[in-house]
Length: 151
Image (tube, rainbow, N blue to C red; front, side):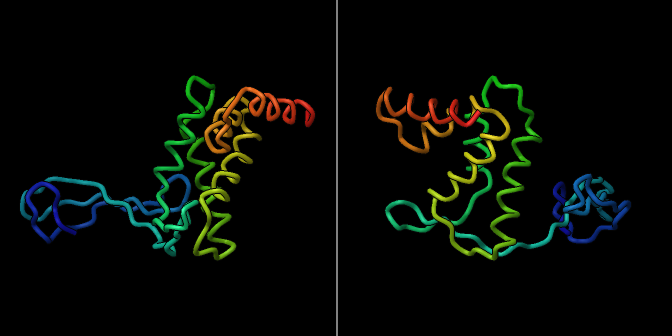
C-alpha cells in the first residue's frame, strides 16, 4: 500500500478490525519511510452493475448518485445520513442478491421510492415528483391521494 504522504510503497499494519456494519476491514498502517500513519478500508469487490437510461444508453451504477437523490428528497426532514445510506445499501443488496447485472433507471427509482415511502412520506413525494416527472398539480395531487388512500 502506497503511503498517501510520501508515496513510499512499504508499510506495516498496526491495527486491523471490522467496521461497525461488518462489510469492510479497517486497517491502521504506518509508512516505513516517513513513519506517518493512515487508515485504509478493505472491502469485497462486487459485480459491476450497469444502469440503462431511458434513451437506452448504459452507465456504470454510481451509489453516490442514489445517495444524492435521497439526500435532496430528505432535505429538512428528520432522517439521518445513516438511514439514507441504509436505503442505498438495501437496494444494492437486493440487486446483487438477484444477480442483476443491468437495471433500468426507472426500476432503480421505483426501488428508492418504495424505501422512502416506508421511511418518510414527504421525502417519498419529493423524490416521486422528480422521478415521475410531475408536470402539473393534478398529477401531484393524484399521487398524494394514492398515498392517503393507502393509510
